[in-house]
Amino acid sequence: MTGPPAAPGHGPAPVFPPGPAPVAAPVPRLRRIATPAAVLAGVVGAFAYVGTVDPNEPGHYPVCPLLRFTGIYCPGCGGLRSAHAFAHGDVVAALGSNALAVIGYAAFAVLWALWMVRAAAGRPLRIDLKPVHWWGIGAVLLIFSVVRNLPFGSALAP
Image 1: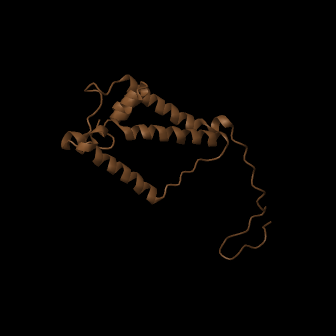
Image 2 (image 1 turned 120 degrees about the vertical axis):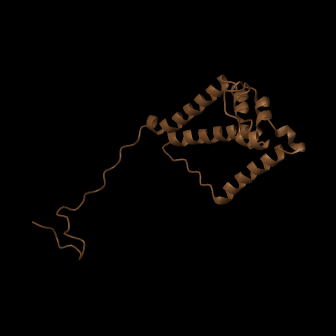
Image 3 (image 1 turned 90 degrees about the vertical axis):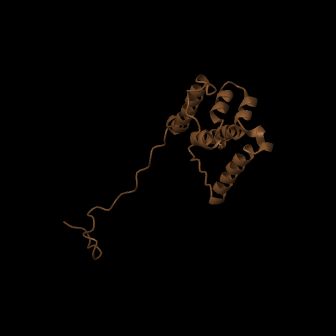
């Protein structure tokens, strides 16, 4: 037995029409927070490693290629020393090594907390950065790099 005739070019119609879509079971809270928790574990592990292996001692980490070949500080120069100081609770030294990195740590903490709260509630975290935001971030990084390499911005140099 065949079903009703199909529209031309679409083959035979199904014998049994599809039923209602199955209702998805709610995702347990532990599963919803697993990804933000894993990201936090990775960040804590990275900070623990940098806190243990001192970047102020030569030979533990590679040298910044831009600094090595040009003598110019990039926006990331001093980031490992900043993370090391931050891991030891010395925020002043962390700011002295790379102030922009410390701002990044704070931004990460706020975004991670928001992500965790939304994940626990079953809502996704959506960060919709438009091109103007990316250009703004690039401009801040460029200005930071230029200023920290000028004599009046030596306080920002690592």
